[in-house]
Length: 273
Image (cartoon, rainbow, N blue to C red; front, side, top):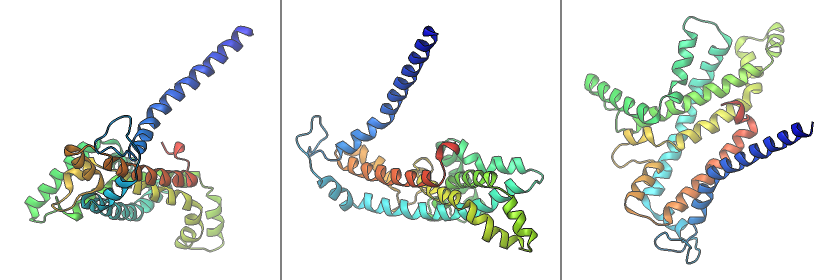
């Protein structure tokens, strides 16, 4: 018994130490970036000569960052709305109805989540070029093309989170409403929708996050004079190495962390992966 207790204690210590190391490996780079954003040095160096908030002011005054933030916010909001309009009905059909090819449709809807971003971005770019060749309608390099791509990025997460909510709800409530004479639309809007609302809110927030942080697809599809915040960061780092980039990254970290915490409030993200 003593040997068993010792073994269990060592196992707990090992798992605890491993968890601590992995957490530190993930969190410490973020902490360093936020810390770096306050350095007073003109060029990044350790240890810092002092601390300042000027880099945050400079980041906002830099046109490429400010414009990139606006484009990313607009694109993320559109992608969120589009993914909800398409994803909620699709989730309802996939969960509630059996039809020929349902598994294939489900796979297609979730495929953007599986395909590497760089592969998906290049594939979309080639597809848009082929459409332009056949129809003389330009999509690549336009705002419309960027919005379509980001909607595809967000759609799988909406389908997954809303489907999870639908699977977990008690259908007897819907059946009771239908037995009392409520139409299918009334049941959906008055019963189903309020019950799965936390999943829809989580889907909206998470869809916005995955669109906002996307780089791989955006880099293929942005047009002249338009750039997302992620591309602006990459371009800036090519020629500059100062704490402006740390300030931009720190704001992103704070925004995304807040959205993920709100998302987890409505739907535990650990259950969605």
